[in-house]
Structures are given as structure tokens and as C-alpha cells.
Image (cartoon, rainbow, N blue to C red):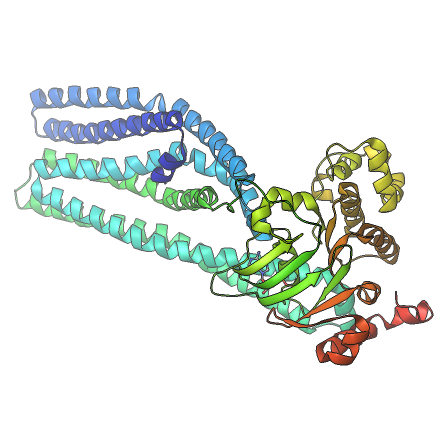
Length: 582
Ligand code: ADP
């Protein structure tokens, strides 16, 4: 942990941290001296040697004074270290955020970065001040004092050192076990949270299926596993502390037994016996008090690891002089890509989107449709082949130019805690009020504004929680319309939209696509039929067929199946609309 803090800190941060560590080291050493001199003082006192007792008392007082002098400023310096490192971690994360590829901030990661930047940063930055002191007092003072004991009584000294070594080795082994259990628990929690969310989203279907359906059972199983893992982690955590405490108690008893034996055998002065009993008792207390902080330190270490990962993550290479696209057609040329190097998600993907036309991507869930959109927007660079816009490789265009030429409407729309108006204006910073309101009108946002207390000037809660999923998507369409980019990448949302929303969204999307070059992950029959070309993906991320609806319905078996399922699923709407799809 300290190593990472030194790596990420500025020279000033490092100076403050060094001062804190130096003061803590001095206070720990002084504490060890103090404890030993108190033991020696008691030993001399009970052995009827007041001269030595007085001398040891003076040394003990001196040690306590040094301890107090070193310990006193640590509180203030620890707070400085805390606040400086919180600021530093935020600064590093913010600096990196503007450089890293957009793919880095995808779903899980952005949540993780949020936690790292808030509670994690606070915890890690305050860890040296809050947790190192008891640990240093427990470990350094105990180790040092047992070393002194060797000079006072080598037999008891060696025994104490041997037990200290056992505690240290056991601690290292147990904490590794705890770390693994904690990691599994984290993964399990994420899994069951996802299950519960999915469970909530598919309620209409599940309720129709009745109690004890497959969905309910899946959630129940996930919860049960999570609970079991939580118990396992807690008991591992408790058993780490518990077992170490047992070893310390056992060590204390063995040392007392040895000292008693030496006393009875006449090989130890009664005064020294008292001194050693008091010293060993105090050391055991300090060591036990330090134990619970080990877990905390481990957690702080994990957070700092996360910060370091962000700092060390590679940015995409940017061209010194970005190329200029020749028009806005899009070409996927034998593209291969995987999020992990050896697990390809899309392979050998080739298709061409003519400027101003719409290409619909269809394929089973997980076939790589969203991945292709992200590659077109250069969230990531391809592993093989090339993605070209206007005939130029997106790597030659550079991220800025690519992002300038695309407008994206994805499923997860994030709204900022600002007015509805500003949330739309995010699409293009320099837009006038008229332009913002015109885009809002086209996307059906004016209706949303009319229902809000302050219209367009109503402040949206963070993440847009006070708007429905469909309303958020309409805001995102308005943003994209305002941006007026030549390329549109869109993911039609299917879930949780009511019919009114769906109608408005459809209208907005049609306006958005217009004569722009569009790639759409299509779910609606209307969009699919209307597309200039449809790219059918296999479950393994390969292009299985390319063509229009009329062509594919004859030539592609997968497309026929897909179409059959779609029309069946939306059959009720066909009837309601008197035969017109959606
Ligand atoms: P689709 O849009 O067709 O449902 P995706 O492109 O979202 O498919 O996903 C294709 C595959 O890539 C899936 O197996 C998915 O789990 C994986 N995947 C998607 N996004 C990520 C990511 N950010 N990190 C790792 N794997 C991912």
C-alpha cells in the first residue's frame, strides 16, 4: 500500500507521507523502549534495587516523552496525508478519464471507478493515518520489545520472538485466504444483483408463468449462493482474527509457563518475573489490538490497486495529423475483435454502409451487435482488419474526429443533474435556444417538459431517475438530433417502454436517421423492413447473411427464424394496427 502511495503521489504528497511514517516509526520505537524500561523498572523494584529502579524509571519517562512528542503531531499530519491523497487520486482519475478510450468506462468499469473515486479514495487515503499506527505499534513495538527481551533473558526473548514469527507467518497465510473469499463474495453479489434486476424487468412474463417459475428459482438460487458466500467470507474474516488471537493467547500462556518454571527453578529473579509478565501481557495486548486493522489495510490496498490500474491503462494511439474522411460511408473490412485477447467476440466481419443509407444489425443476444457499434465509434481499436469512415481507417482519423462525426443513441442513457434544457444542449455546446427547442420538439421532449414543474428548466435528478426509460431515450435522441452528425449509431431499446413512448421514439428515430448514414441494432419490424440492408450475425459474431428483407426472407434460414419469432411476439400489435407492422 505504501509503495503504491509513493508511486502515485506528487513530491509534496510523498514528503507529507514520509513525515507521517517517520513520526510513527519514532513513536513505535519509543513505545518499545518505554515498555522494556517499565518492565526493567518493575524488575528492579521488586528485586529490592531502588537505585536501578530509579534509573529505569527515568529512561521510561524519557521514552514516554519521546513517544508523546512523536505521536502528538501524527493526528494532524495523518489528516493532511488523507486530504492530499484524496485530492491526488481524484486528480489522477480525472486526468486519465479524458485520455482513456471510451471502452474503458463501459458499464461495470464506470461503476467501479465511481466507487474508487468516492468511498475508495477516502478509505485508501486515510488508511495510513487510521490503520498504520495500531499496526506499527502492534508489530514493530512487539518485535522490537521481544528483541530487547533476548538481552534481558535470552530464553524468554527467543520464545517471544518465535511466537511473533508464528503470528506473522499465520497472518500472511490467513489474509490471502480472506482476500480470495472477499473476491468471490464481490463477484457473487454482482451476479445476484444482476439476477434481481433482470427478475424485476421480466415481471410481466414471470407473473403470467405463475409461482415457482424458472425465473423465480434462478433468483432464489443466486440469493442463496450470495448469502452462503457472505457467511463464508465473514467467518473467514472472523476466523483470521480469531485464530491469530488464539495463537497470541497460546504464546502468552507458554511464555508465562516458561517464566514460572525458570522462577521456580531459581533461574529467574522474582522482580524480573514480574517485569516480564507485565511486558509480555502488554505486547500481547498491542498485537491483538492490531489484528482487525489487517483486513482494512488489505481493502485499502485493493482500492489503490484499482487506482493504479486506471493510471496504467493504455490510451488509444492518436495520429499526429488526423486524416480527413472522404464522405461518410462506413466499411467493416474483415474485422476481428475480443474484449480479452484470446476470446474473440466478432470475427471476419465485412460489410459496407453506403453514405446516407441505413443498415440494420440483427442476430441473437451476445452475437456482437453492440460491439460493432462501439468499434465504429472507436470505443476500442479492432484486433484484426479495419473500420473505415469515408474511406479512412478510424485509427488514422483519431478518436476526436470519429466522435465528432457520429451521434450515438444507446440503451443506457445517462442524464446529468442539471436542467432538462442543458441535458439536451450537451449534444452540441454552441447550440442556440431555438436549436435546442427544435431538436426537443422533433424528439418528443417538449411533451415531457410540459409535464415538469419548470418545463425545460426543471432540474433532472442525477442519472435521470425521475424520468422513465422511454423519456430518457427521447432526451438522448434530442441530443443526437442537435449534434446533427453525419453518422448515427443507434440501439433501439425494447424493454420497459410504453406504447406512447414507443410511438414517439420511433418518430424521433426516423427523423434522426433521415438521410444520415445509420447503423441500427434493430428490434422493431418497422425499422428492419425499412432498412436499406440487413446484416445477420451468427451467435459467434460472424456475418451470416447480408441483404434486404425481401432477399433474406428467402435466402437466410436464421433470418426467417428471427423474423418468425419477431412477428409472433408482436402479433397482438399487428392485429390492433389492422395488419400494419407496428
Ligand atoms: P449483442 O449486442 O449482440 O447482444 P454484445 O456486442 O453486447 O452483443 O456482446 C458480445 C459479447 O461480448 C458477449 O459475449 C458479451 O458478454 C461480450 N461483451 C460485451 N461488452 C463487453 C465488455 N465491455 N467487456 C467484456 N465483454 C463484453
